[in-house]
Image: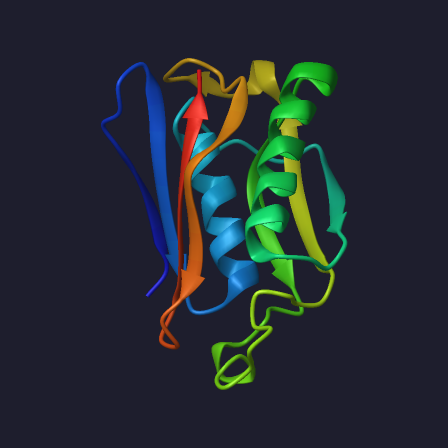
Amino acid sequence: MRGHRTVPHTADIRLEAWAPTRDECIAEAVLGLVASFADVTGVHPERFVTVSVPEGPAEDMLLAVLDEVIYRLEVHGEVPVDVEADGADAIGDDIGDEDADLGDRLDLRFAVAAAEAVEPVGAPPKAVSLHGLTFATDHVRWACSVTVDV
């Protein structure tokens, strides 16, 4: 019930992710973004980093986390090899809530490794585009779709 995939897009990457909760969906989007440029199979993390995003619209939270992945790659030379969502936002809590896209603060735990430790499989991401960004729940699962500039 949770996963991610990339779909063809002219000169960029189109990433889709889905999961039972908002936070798990964002974690899947991180894993999908990483899979678009690096094979992390068998790579052991060097350390753990907590990424906290203040509450706000789900789309803004998704963008902030994906931007953090790009920042860590470009500035710190590190790649998340695994991601864990803390205190996931359950679908059931959103049903009938008109402010369902305004959730609690998001805390993700990145297990990171040096970029040199992963196998490159594609162009590294440069930015996340606002064009065509979607992130919503159908009360069964959360799903997002985003375009990444490479």
